[in-house]
Image: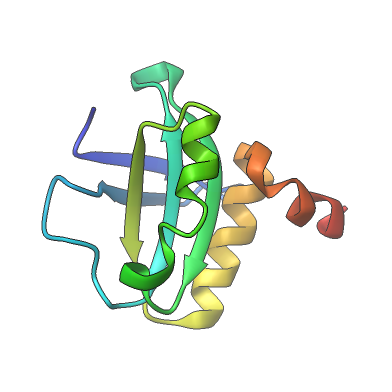
Length: 108
């Protein structure tokens, strides 16, 4: 499992996420997070989320994700709520995570 991954947005921006567990415990700071399975070219985003407190909320749906084969949580610190939500919308539209189907239906 890589310590960091780069995710592309629809606009072409590259967002860097850090493997949870590769560094310090989840921060109480705000950010975006991903539940993933697989590695390298086979990496699949199962869920993309955002929160104002990663330590409290980034693992809310982790058990559900593990049932789908999730193997890691990646996080990206991002303190600005508007930017977090924009990045989340971009990630969901590009990767179409199966656990975000409600988000996709609302956007479509």
